[in-house]
Image (cartoon, rainbow, N blue to C red; front, top):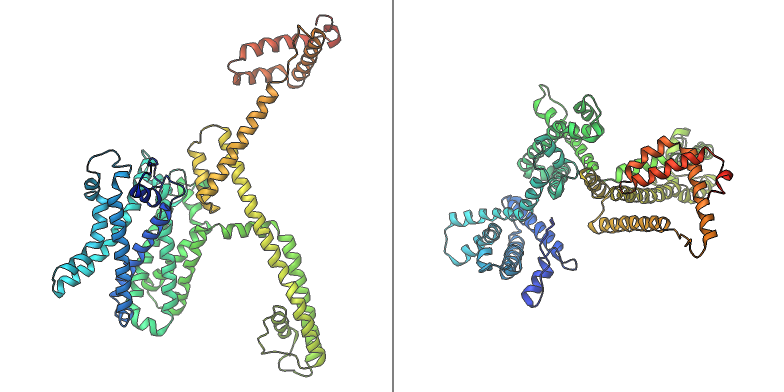
Length: 547
């Protein structure tokens, strides 16, 4: 929930400046600014959820004291935050050097919102109110959600600045996909959608419990309607902004290409159960539709690179994985056949045929051993012991291969990201396309800010090292013709022969076309090229006396 600020680092010379530096200054890398903002942000969300839960009688009944203690704890934290921000206002970048900084802060938008979050509690504590007023004050505690404006407003302003002059469709695409124009607001939108995915999944799971469904049926219905509305808006927005997606730029029908993409089909499956349940003219099995809503869990694959990395690993290592799976299948069939051979006469009802024995072989190899089918003959039990021991190693092979390949793929992805950074920095300043690439790749690989800084530092150092190496070769040692005239002439002859070979191999047209990139030395290089072209017409030995 943190956002980036560009405030200058203060000079901490007292207690209050130190508090501001360690708790509220984003430019101080050793401080706890990010932890404070994230902690307060999550506390706001949890406290609002607790206030909503208070109005659900089955949840609130019998837990009044726990809810009250949690509310007091939230008030204490919010009051402490309000007081510290007010006390350290003179060291905020917005009020630095201004008179009456604390008063200016007290009447600012964010300070008023922070005060509004704690005012109902103190008002009800110091003023006698009736029951209706008390209920209104309890309801006003929901205004704490406005404290999130401290994070949303700067993110929105940053998003507006990054997308100044761009179309609505381009803004929607930047809001939904990581680009150079997305900013922190895109992260908040992703977190909001992920929250509703998880909440709807929890509601579907708990709805299957009859005792819970009987009490919270209305709340489950509200959650389902809100989730459907949010997912539908997201689906339509992505469909509308599809032409802005670089993956569909070359497509004749970009929206159709987006419509049939795998991620879009998952988004459609997330809203389809609600439509089938409420708008079909005939009834369907509601249990099927409710379980079908669990397909929303697949929406989370959009916000993680784990599944994509896993697919890359399987595609790259499919031969090795296939070989290990083949060995497992071979072992299963052989042991199932032996089990049928040893146990069929003793247990014809359990080892009736080889397919039924395959179930026993798989359960034994996996070291599960449900106990519904177990050998009773000495040979069958001996086979079970061997099979259980072999299964420990056999089933570990694919897991080890996938784990090793998965780690290797992550390393390859990060090296590829570093290579892309090198290419971007070689061109000079980062353009919009390069910033979009960095934003997309860093989110796909789940790189932290420290990881990005480290990789950027390594890329810059690699560029500087390459430049130093080029300067070293460009500044080769030239002999002094006054002290070593013979060696100087030999070096000159060697350079001329190299120029002759280059001119003959590349051709004068190619060399002339490339001279435009050497602005300061273009004319000099052209003269040398003309002279070399004349020398190419003569044997090198014939020019030696002239040298």
